[in-house]
Length: 310
Ligand code: BMA
Image (cartoon, rainbow, N blue to C red):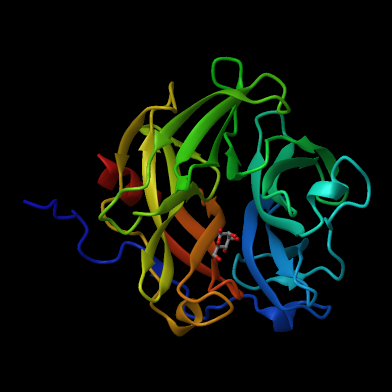
């Protein structure tokens, strides 16, 4: 008998005034805005927006908000495709999909996708003030993306989830590093699930959230259909001491394209996240790109996600 999900109703609630950021909010000409990293910094919500220029490559632009819903976008990008090597060659087609982690040492580390004709690579930049940004390195071989850094070391190593391309498959892997630059001990931790909503590819979304029951990861899952791909979000729980161990995983999506702004745009039927903010009371604000065209937010309770993974 098929598993009947414990939560037949939606456990996530879309913000009534979605989308919260569109191209009209960007102070320079651009094509679209989507897939933002998210973090709380000095009582402000920060989004690091992926803005696609009219030429077609992406850059990263900061937006600030006091309430998490109304954002003001900065005038200039904070990260553009690099002019200097070794980054320039691998960022010729843009910098994409930033994921921000507040690390235990107080620094903010941002993994983003460096995109070029050589396929995507994971790149890493750090900041302490969101004014100056220091590129640390290109930290994967070609063919890897969707990297999220854990907020603390485990067994004295930095830890990330990532998504190498392995013979057409797209599964979530874990990798470890002593210095954030050299990554190894790589191992597959969660696979795409044939027959499900996440049948074709999966990838980490927001950086992992530490809970008493394990690391909660909100991820995206892709299903191919006759009409194209559908991108949805789900969630999974991993062991606190050994995050390569999957404890449980959502049977049904957390959120699927349903509203017009999720169904229609440059790439239809896409909900894709790079960041979420967990509030003191346990509410999560999930920021997501809709149809690769605008930014939206939806909320849910951290505890609901954790419980339904068991
Ligand atoms: C993925 C990434 C995302 C994008 C999604 C849907 O592969 O490129 O940036 O939102 O596809 O187009």
